[in-house]
Length: 419
Length: 123
Image (cartoon, rainbow over all chains, first blue to last red; front, side, top):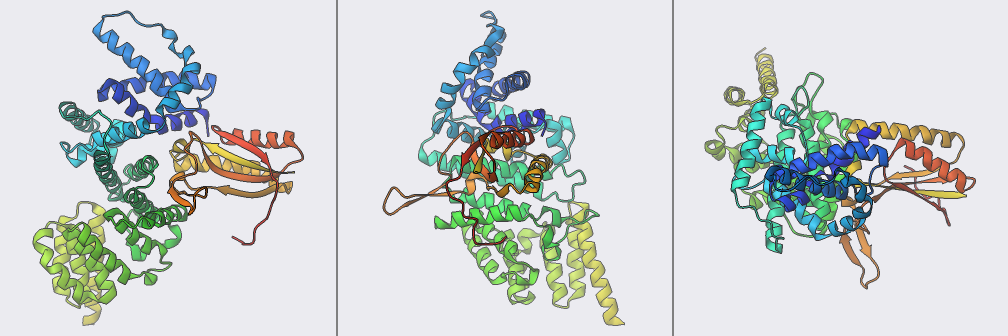
């Protein structure tokens, strides 16, 4: 790897901690970001010359803090500029700085930064955009591509989010244990939103949204490093690794979604699956159930099946039933019905989903499942009606094409039945 | 003499590499390894999962205490190791320099082995 790439990776990795600490000093997101940006520019000059520092985050925080103070002074025009030569003192200052940053401060800084991004005043789309910009350091055009909107629209979305944060009440005191647990839960949910934003976009031709999955995994690793004994965070990371492991098999050469049962399982990323299973193992030891762990356990059963017919659908059905209790939602019931159809047949499954139509009447996947179940039950006319509604609700070309495949198969089957 | 090369690096940075960057580092390391393999000096090589996958059993208490996470919270973490047959420390350090060129950042701790058991399973 080139020196520049290494420096870039070090700065990306240091970013959450550095911006988190700078935010604590300046109590303003824009000032913290500008100070970090400035520190990175100086690092690009200093690191190739002096070699990278042992603790890049501490270096960036110290330099960023000085430059942020400079900027504040310049803005207020009260005092003259401090000497340009700040960098020369860094060698001595770096070690005690790094020591001070150890432990609790670090954890609370990063957690606060992530927590601010998922402030309840922000709609989910702004939460994700803000986290990707501020915590992950993606550029506005990168995020805009991921959301399939223009650069200026995304710039506006992020500016609006920041303005709301500035007006909102942001807690800067070190949180107590209950607050910390609450923040952790909110941050974990936000990370899962980021992941799903990327995961639901498998057909994106530029694969811009696929990077969101990688960023979400990176954030979850960071969160777990901060709270190493939290089973739900382990579960979240396990879940995302197990799902992302299938990325290469989920889309075929022409960009079509490939269903789990049709995927070439040799394309699954075994390293990610291994790490996901190891994390789930760790989580289960704590014997504290939670939705992320339950979803991860379901993904693990898929990952463990060498062939689709080896899938333990009975166990998956039980896990969805547990998830229904932990997090009741018609979508969970719909997924449970799919497991039921595999374990005990389409009639039971159809009976389970029919009461959901009122609440899931605008949901593409509902009519896709309903159509598939009706097909299996030999009711092609009703199946076709369900598939037609699914096509009408499809939000991407790939989704629509997938349903059209179902319809084609249905036509062929009914044609051959007639023949 | 057999030497262990304990590979330490900033875990956050290493796991921020893109797949392409990761592949590039692995390919560069592979070239160094190939030279050692040809000289029949290359022993087991291990790359560890992130420390978030680690569990630590503290055995200074009775019963031992099981803790989530790595043994030590450090700026740089143990991310893998090699066992390599080197004539002397000079050669070991020269091997470490070759690895360092392929994979900058962090550190190699070069430590001679006291006991080497090749193991009993094939993978």
